[in-house]
Image (cartoon, rainbow over all chains, first blue to last red):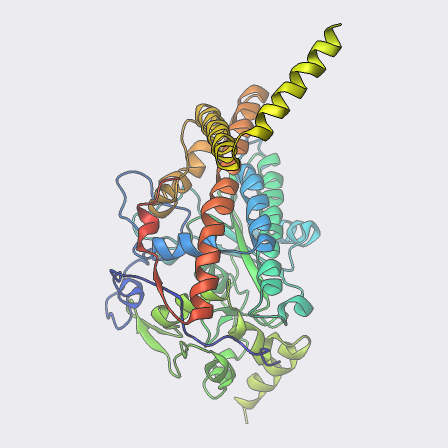
Length: 322
Length: 129
């Protein structure tokens, strides 16, 4: 797949007083480990919290969005009120966390999630200064319609992205309500909540981090959106997966060549004390704003082609033993 | 008798409107519209106890408290109903902001893109509707 005539990386909007570089806030080239800090999208800052450096661009991004994506945002805003709810008074005892984890995963798939994994909520899942009163995270992946996503970077694809965020949120709401009905506290942490979905998904074995900074799964490549349910119910956690993503990304150039603002690095970068794939924030986000969410990198990725991920993974893992 | 008087008064009113210059009539209409907008916003503000402006949006103070304002853990049906009403008012304000300020920004963005010029977006943090 190649994007159809993506617009050039030239912008009609600009900051008169440029904010601090998003790369600096994200900790590019920083050797010490620390928590991430919000920089662009955010469900917000209450009183007494640090302001978000790129909030003006985020507001601009929201305000200029087309009716299709905006309508999905409005619907998500309405259903988001159900992220939390009351817990049933009678608690179902958990004897074997592995069995219960399997049951919860089966329920998640039944509800409509396409990928599910469980992890412990670690430091890397939370932004600086944030805390959550839960121990476990159930990461849910919801696959997007590939035919719609082939229209990136146009409004049609942006609408599909926001639709899947809404459906992912709905899945998380339903799963959280199910866990609460078993007498265990649970809350949906999906679209609009300030948690880092990607580290949790990686820890839960949903996939591996790709060169374009998104999670790549064997089943859907990067063509899915993430949501999560946090709970205290004792659950057996999954292990991070190795499906051979690095073996492909180290030599593949597709996302690097097709990215109009040249935001994707060829090599892994040092980010907050960890060497990993990273996307240049200062180049990516203005283009992301201009094109209502871009998404070219995740659609040109060879892993995102339906049915190809399994084959690629098997081939890459087999090559290691030759 | 009553209905003919009503018809007469309507006729008189329409004749008066027609005789007035267009500009005056437009100004009156705009004034009335502005009055209704202010009234609607006042009602919304009363219901939701806060109003959304682009400054709020940028500072995210209203978005940031979504959880505090709208999440209910243990609640009765009345509390849930009240929450839903407040949330509807909040969403109406978001739609209002998107349609009024958003339309202006979309037009500005379109014009400057076509001309190949740029416009600053910093003012978003200061703009009040």
